[in-house]
Image 1 (cartoon, rainbow, N blue to C red):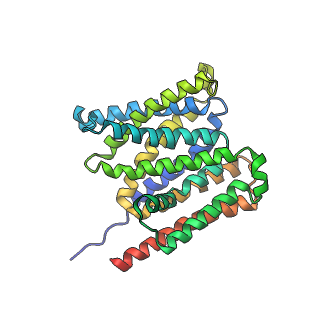
Image 2 (cartoon, rainbow, N blue to C red):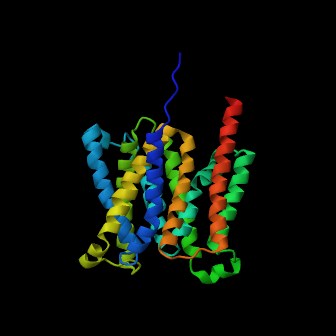
Image 3 (cartoon, rainbow, N blue to C red):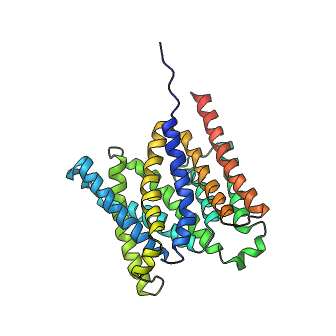
Length: 307
């Protein structure tokens, strides 16, 4: 006799908490960058995060877990791609675009992963996924252009949107490459790659400061946005990622649909703060959410047919 598996309510709660925290991090990070530039904000965020993660790894798994098992170069490259590309590029892009636009672009990551698997592994997506990919990028185009492509050149946000899209691609690459470390715990992989990535961010920040692209914040400036820094460092970067990993393990691959709460949260905050979205932004965000739903339903149906 088999017993019914209880609903993974704890996993669902973790996924919602993670996605909402990430959705909040866009407007919160954007507000912080009015005072502290993207380079120093990322350096502070991941400098602290890496130190905390390494301390946790040492406590939980011992000093042996600090070794790279003969693959320090791969760990370093993934740290640069994931943190340097996926996070630093994200924040620099966010500085030059709207928080809501960035959140919508980031929400397409599951579909970006399908495109990347197609290009690299020659794993052609199913028809439903191809339809979802086209639908999602149509939605992104509507959001970014606000329904008027001719205005894109003068909006000043096109470069920022492209950087956010590049950051999403980097983060997907980083996530997929985690499979190369099957014997490592999620904590070990995150701590070691985040540490390598943090060193790269420090170097990039120093270089940006030297050429005048970044400015060293004063103590008064840091204090004025201390709660924003604490949120993007601990709330989004650490708690959000931990909750997401826990939720995916409990709920399964279908839990990726909860990424929809990222743009929904960002849009709700935008409305509360008085931003008026036009029809194209609302329709575009809806298309991205619909695309993710369609992709997941199609994948579930394929698995059911082959199961």
